[in-house]
Image 1 (cartoon, rainbow, N blue to C red):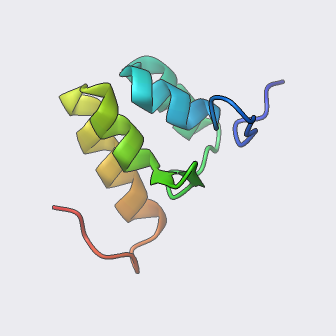
Image 2 (cartoon, rainbow, N blue to C red):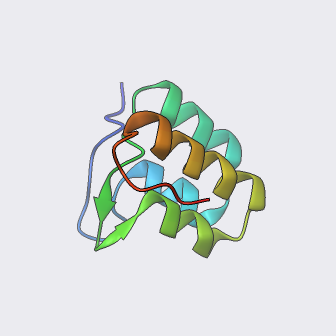
Length: 77
């Protein structure tokens, strides 16, 4: 079984990689498997990686996942 929170020295976490490449299905699967949507990798949040990926739906889901996981963080919308 893959580690959803694994971070390497090149690509960061699988969740950030899926977000940065705009892969919505992979992003959803990783969240369902327990990936942390509040993770910071290489100084960037999952939301920032999603923005760089350019998939609008993925950006919305990244923001919603972050807010659901940590409601004490400032809102992004």
